Image 1 (cartoon, rainbow over the protein chains, first blue to last red):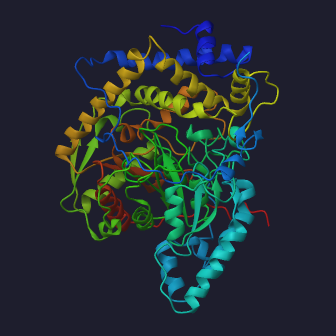
Image 2 (cartoon, chains in turn yellow, purple):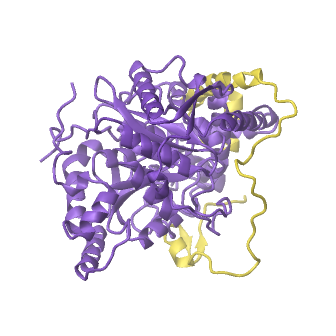
Image 3 (cartoon, rainbow over the protein chains, first blue to last red):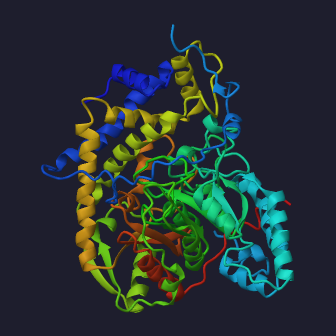
Length: 95
Length: 502
């Protein structure tokens, strides 16, 4: 099923990426040609085949629910583009 | 015509392997400071053209070298990696320098923690040379997708080094480091290794902790060694492997001494040759070199078994759905809030995310995030992501059946030698197809190595790939090591000496 420019705009919103008009056109045609190639997978009958989400059979690897030190706050805050003490400052979230 | 190289016959310590250097440093024939200076001299002379490095740790490297020399002067023993220069792909968190993933969105980011593998190497006494260039967020097969610079192949500076670990591959090939680390999601260690004429090993998923490796595709990524020979790869595997409580996907399996594989020969080994990897689209020189390598292995005692991996042609579509889908989730964290680049002109937080990601990410990264988001979106999840993961099971079954009849599968690593910079950049699908031989090992959870096996008429390196069952790195190292011993011709060094800037 071909991807339209509307689809690209919708997906860009989901992915939180702003696209220039020209980028939307280029991406529409690139995604279509990649997805065309991916259509190949429909040649295969996968009825009854279990998906492989993970190459290893590892499940629920938990640690004990104990307090342990995390990253030092000040080290983490050094990378903040904008900060207010130990808080990350961002533009307005709610109108 | 290939120029003559003068570096391989020289007494320059930068031309040697880690295991050779360990011996001569222990014997007092060369000082660690001399080695580190020699490596940085190579960088100063060639890296303006090769552009393997994004940043260098010259001062700390020399300080560490002095401490190793003090230890040696006291007559103490040094470990196998102690005093050995190692370059790190800039997708690994280090406390020194920046960690950028070759992306504008992380320019200036200083990691508040170091990767487990970096910590292990540091404790083993390795000396870090610097961070190497890569395709942005490890997405690419040529290192042309770096936001900062294009790395050149030391064998021909108009050609790509491969990707995404192109900087690490070029640095090892050019003797700008002794060892390097790369990461492999769809071939990103093995393909640049083959294009640059070095050894590259992708360990089994779960063998090495991914803590501190910036995630691209969480079910596929693995860190691995990029080295001048198989023994050096085994030494790095010994130090880096093992379960890590900070990576719940790392497995609790004993770590063997991987160097023990190097004393074993080929009699008793069955090598599977898959017909799908020797069909159309392979360069004649690659076919000839790989077939010669198989012949040498047969003469050295291996049994050759013809087999089929029938789902090979579906590897690329599966990979691009799975890897892109996982990437779209992993790269959602780059939003300008807590670290990295933030767009300045946003009125509200959503607009900040959108503009930050628009200007911070390069076009290949955006393309894959868009593809992955589409594949996972409501209405398409079953048709794409779920379908791809079911086909992945069919791959695993192909290999399970193959490994009932052989101990390892042998194939070319790349269908062609290094291609020209710019040759494939306008057709992303064409670029994706260069991963055709490497992808299956990631999808099926195998381990695989690429070893140099010849050169094209233009003097460009060609490599052969050996794949084995999950956690069977010993077999891969055994076969690669035995082939190295029986290869029958000396490896060359890249003809850089005429290219240096004095």
